[in-house]
Length: 480
Image 1: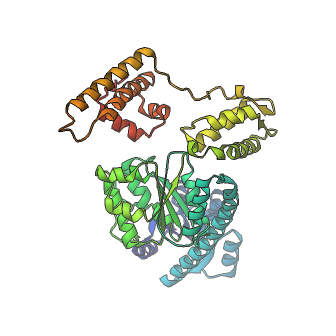
Image 2 (image 1 turned 45 degrees about the vertical axis):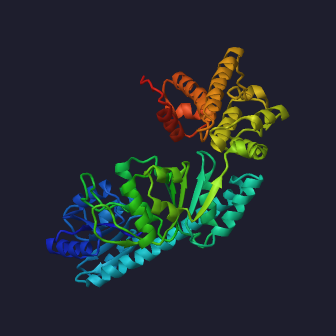
Image 3 (image 1 turned 60 degrees about the vertical axis):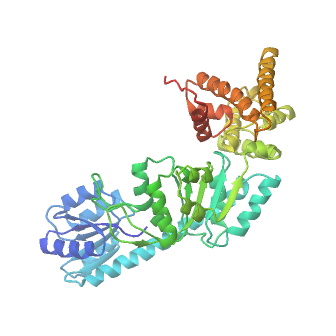
């Protein structure tokens, strides 16, 4: 990250004034200290990237302060200033860990040159670090995206086609299907490898904070904004940003995302400067964005901007042939992480795992395997080690319920035949479905004490779908 916040420590008021004015004009956040004690206090309280320190100050001298700084912050870059140009001062300053040494009076261009050199060095260091991490992650990624089913092979093909370009991608799928893994695969196989991959969950951050997280904040923009903060888009500059659960983003922020896509620039909260950004956007959602558009909850123009290439991730229940591969992978991973001997599943256990619906998808499967590995002392996992899983139950209709249903259908059929001459369509399906849906949802809500998140998981439907059904069916939700 480039230098943003600088401390200037000098007992001369005129020098503090000149440096602060020049640095603030260039957009830096600057704090001032009139002596070594004040400088030390500020250094302990604030995350400066750079300090410009006079060598001669009352109390703690610049060189003594430099020693204290090295104990506190190895990463802080310190430039020593002095009015006495002596070899002894220069050598001593550099020996104690100063980044550079300048003699008063100096031209302000000297400070500019030092900052530019520092920024280049920091950028190179950051890129090397990012590249190492991403290469490591890329190696892990080949093992993390597991699946050989037809639907997963199609996903791999699409990743291969879209990765080399900067085209915007929308990854769709239920929670726990691995949307972020797909986004990372796109980034790691693109020309942007070596640049940042920044992920943010739009549903996990309160609306009031999401804007500042995405676009950054200028110092003083609001109460508590004591320093400039760089947003996720700036952090991702040159690389990719992954906007997870974008369907939950407020409408006013959606318009700002649209502007980034169109203008390729951002403006920090409380600021008026347009900052250019070169970022590839990969978005993800577990919702039906077309329905959100129809309900006026998602901008249509943003939807079409994001939905250039959609990638749909099937839920685990629709690619059961991948479950044995995933089980094997998670067994090895869990045992390695927990430093335990390798476990394996019996054939009966594997059949049980393969039959389960997995409403939480891959995330649920991983947690279930890890729990069994921790609790089971034996190398062979049996069905008894998965007590939370039961074979899928077929709900049978009793004779009384069957007669009630027959009566309802018979009544509706008589209505249809009686008015066939002027009737366009019947409604038996919707009426019968409603008769089944309403008591089912009511029963599950009652058992979960009106916890809609738990109820949706048990029913195996999206929580937004559940909310919609509650409204459509007029179900009263009791507040506990």
